[in-house]
Length: 428
Ligand code: AMP
Ligand code: GLY
View 1 (tube, protein in one colour):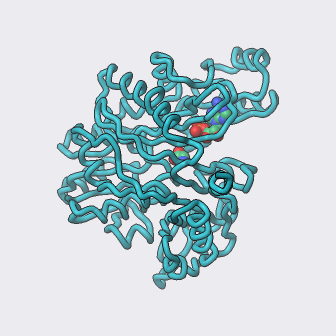
View 2: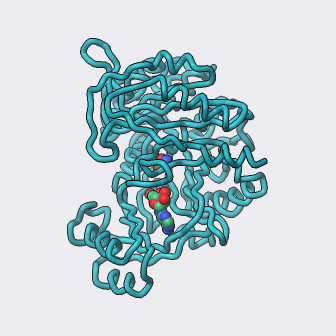
């Protein structure tokens, strides 16, 4: 098979790396890719949002399956566009991608089936929103309805912060039309969890649970980022809870999507909060998570390409995937200044040494080759270093040994990725 992966982050490196490993594969392309992806796939310089050029490339290169990394092309309708040219994509149609593209759509879909989620109200102007805020008080969460590059969710600890968030939406118009409608949502407390499933029509293949770290600094301090690390599986999620999450959250959501006549083929990513009153949904995404994918795929023993190809054709999925027993821990190394504006072009030293650590995989995100072929940073998140081991202690130690081997100017990473899981393991 000839496969095209769309994107150029750590998630797409993990996808391309795993797909390249499949006995079914003849050739992997990636648009636009990065310096690490170039080692497992042929990179083509087309932006993920340029659907027409991507479609032409796929047609001219007889691509059998296109796998989309980020939500942007999905929400823009890449699946629908490719279908008109008889091309298969692993990912939902534009209509189905509204699950991620519109938070109001997503909330209404959950309500319909009693899928547990935070209480919310929607507003299309500041006045009523403000009086509602005054009524319910803080902490509270203000969310732009549409896609806002991961910045449209504002957790407000005080009423002042909440009002400022409303002003960002309605007065400053920071998110443009994405915040024409704003949700004010009950603040949920607990442990966060990512549960990704491969969906083929009304069938669900749940993947192993994963944990994602959103804040930049240790101890969940500082601003939100695209994700600073992840691990899988999650030891606090026992079999009973896992089944409950699948039966009470994932399956009813997929059933409701199918009931609406939507043929969903792709990843359904449930962002969950394990609260005192039980698990609740924070959001659904319509694609693989970054950096969850960098912890999930190194443990996957099943043939990923076969699963994606099965789902893309709407065929029958196996009931479960095969996983290696031991856990995986992925630590993100980011450029100086991230998540604000970051430096670029800094030489990256020590990758070979990191690769040499037993049980370590290095996934590239913001990397490129300089004029002299030297590996340099390209800003934002630069690498995810994933350690595999028999225990969390071992997987963590390996991941951090890999991290310690690598350096670039301004480099930042968290030191507490999967520490909770290691402590949990030690208590048993
Ligand atoms: P989202 O983009 O919806 O995943 O939101 C980004 C982050 O905001 C989540 O990962 C949570 O950490 C936080 N968040 C979103 N909704 C809520 C909520 N209702 N209560 C508490 N935190 C939330
Ligand atoms: N890890 C969060 C996301 O992919 O949205």
